[in-house]
Length: 590
Image (cartoon, rainbow, N blue to C red; front, side, top):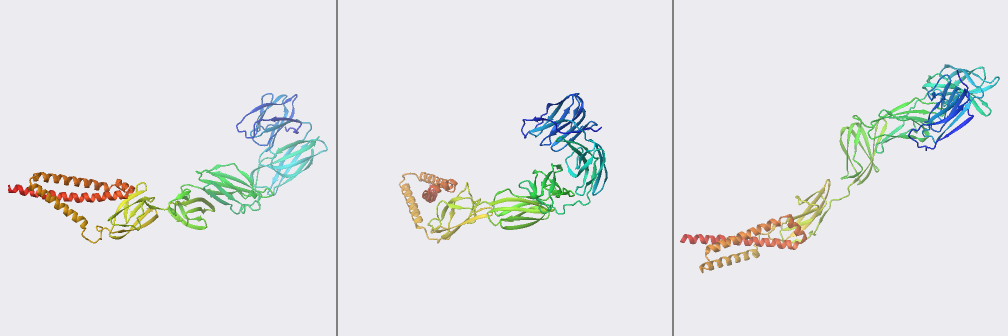
């Protein structure tokens, strides 16, 4: 049996103090209304956000909720309001349990029927591609008229939808109404709700009933003929969708998105916004987009599906350097699964293109040290983009000498070259030089005359060259004329003669036995050689190079003394050999 329904006589405001950002569920229970005798009752809930949960508790403990649909209980739910019609409501104290969800407050109104308007019968007749015929009969006041509406909905027991037609009918008479379906989109589950009402003392009294579900296909339904522009921005992990041309002439579009088959909540967007953004996680492999556009009459297009591949075993991929410094103007990158894929590199005003196939490594050559690179390629009408900043490390290879020797003239057959460099490798006249913590020092041999010395420092592909000219006037240098060095030979001869004569005189006068003098000369000779060898080893060590860096004059004096020790050792060796021969001859005579 259908019951009577009337609205708003008594309002109970259930004000809730929780803020709109309320997240966790919190159910409350309050007294609703006390019924003295059984009677028809209408309860209306109003709210801003349609996430309210509720239940009516009868005095006997029976519970009515949104899923209840019996002969004497009917529930109509809308986006902003819900109506609960209870026929012959039980006498006693009724309660309401509720959770307001995100709403700051909800409103509750209770009405006990004061007049009648009841839908006695309602049925849909033939439904074709243009219209649907509805017949119904409403009882109520005698010789009076009521208003009716036929509303297209996608949910049963709902009045939120598209108004198809409206008019007036007389109570007690059969009414036939035609619902225009020419502006209705194709859908597999529609309902047409009959809504009838009258005015009673300033209040609206109504009844409503939903038809059975039906499917509808509009033969004039349009399709989206042009694909929107999809741009995948890997750097910001989003897909930009531009539909300005594809959806020209439409009013709104319903966007449904799935990330790796996980469907997200759809959204209806005004076409005038020009597009939308879809954010994806870094590990997302595939994005599916479904678009349904609506014209100004609300007529929808056939849904259009678009698949966008982001990654996967068979997907094309670029492996690019991160933003920052690179060692040279060669910008290296790798790729995989290319199929004659054309990749565009926009570097400032320059445009470079590479056609890639298969998997491998490649590079482009940059024209400056500071570069902003926009990289893009198109696969299946989807544009994929990267944005990179690549700056060539601006640290030129440098060589700095501790002492300026370019253009000097020396009478030595070698010169110490020492300094600092940031080069990874250093050569002097083609020979590798050891660099320790940026420092280097070598004793470089000279040839007689002008010497062009070339120092080359290199780091990767970068290098610098330093050329020095040193003039050598040394008589012992390579290429020098073999003039007799009397400044060395004469002291040597005099020293040798004096030594030999002195020893012979002493022996003849028998101041000391010859054998003792021979042994003494040998000991002195060995001592001189040991001293010379020790000093020579030190003169070729890193410590001596450091010593030379501190004092070039002291190092030069050190080397001169070494030369003197060498000649002294040679002289004493000759004396020892001569005296040894004399000792041997003397023993032979005896």
